[in-house]
Image 1 (spheres, helix red, strand yellow):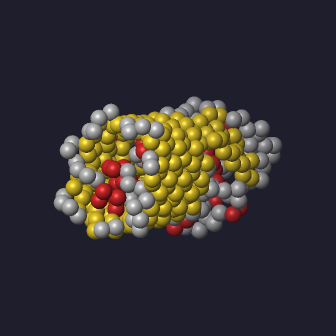
Image 2 (cartoon, helix red, strand yellow):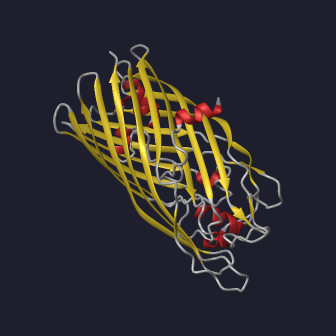
Image 3 (cartoon, one colour):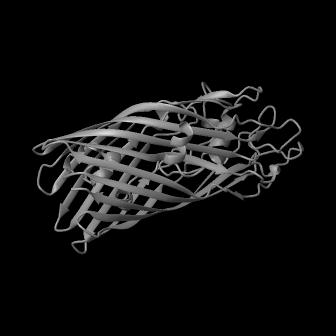
Length: 417
């Protein structure tokens, strides 16, 4: 059953997301508008951003969408000892083979009565992965392969009274994690493959988690919207996933998706829509991410939409969030207390296995209504190349990673009434 859920919700083997390991947004309409939506009604897409806006659906409608995600990740490690001579390798750059994935999103919403509405969404929301298998072991990448996949199923309900809307949803989450790397006894990060090296991964491990999300929206005037939302942390634990301390026994890893909260403001008049959101992702207090030294992120997003005809709206946007692995991320700054393994290896795995360094996203797209019932949304998101280089734990060189991303999203929307 778990494998069926995983394959139906995530039709890819790997994905590498953007705000940390979260996509900037899920529905194509929101993605085209910079990932905004806290203070803007977006039909069934609102189940992803702020469930309070579900109260504005006029009748039964559904959305079927997907995102083709195309990251370009390159890594270089010049910090290991190839022959024990004390000379650091030059570090040959390698490109991750995890360069394409398909991420689905499905939602449905309907009215219950004049005041109440409901919605439900199922979507791949988070993930990360690299693949350096079959690379020369002396490149210092340890034949690394990581694959983290995470989906949510969220039934939600919303209430509307005059200018106030309230919404809440229950989160059922499913995560799967696979970590694989060849590391020697003693586990020097990126050390050349030696006779004592072993494959330390325990294979794919999965778990379910539960949480909730809450939203509020208010329209002080006919043209201005205000919104806020909160999403709880969702705890998951992956059993026997990796031999962190190289003692021959596979260890468990608690990896909880962090709490989020945000506010937004929106404006709409004469075919123009403007939305702006600010939210925080609390990586530093979530199990797993805090042990790996991730910082919290403040995400700033702006979206624009303009109706050029009764059927077509053009959209664009911008989003920025400083990487949770920022310029000060050094192995020497990481506390290994309560961490799964030594500080140096934490730096190595962050850089080579989970390079969450994307910061800027530029978006564009459109919505087109074919009939009163049938419409489509399209979005393109580009994240320019970011580079992070840090000193190695052994002070023998540097580890470096670059990450550039392109993605295309599409969705079909259908109104039943």
